[in-house]
Image (cartoon, rainbow, N blue to C red; front, side, top):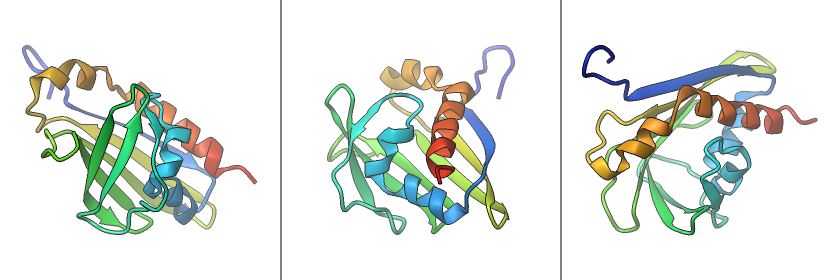
Length: 152
């Protein structure tokens, strides 16, 4: 929503990637791969063995500033869609969501859409950071993901 007194709380970016959706999805659903393509330069590392396989999974990421986030998977369709809500360890997610959607175009091309949605964010201390997450930053993640997925 935009207009006087309103702000956009959902941003997204899309691009075509010259790779099969299954290969791209592996880079997204395996948390150890996420720091390689993170356009916010916010993710430092994740322990292995956390590959997401279903809704309800929780994977932990260490951020570049050293804190840990537990990411609660709220949408999952293998090879096509994954979304999670980050939270402080042991806490309920405050309401922002990261989503990846993959649409096969043909045997070697996939349209990937990355969305950040903070319409349900309840922690006002996080608003400034949420506002700083723009479609341009999401596009950086997509471009980095494409560079990895398109490697021979």
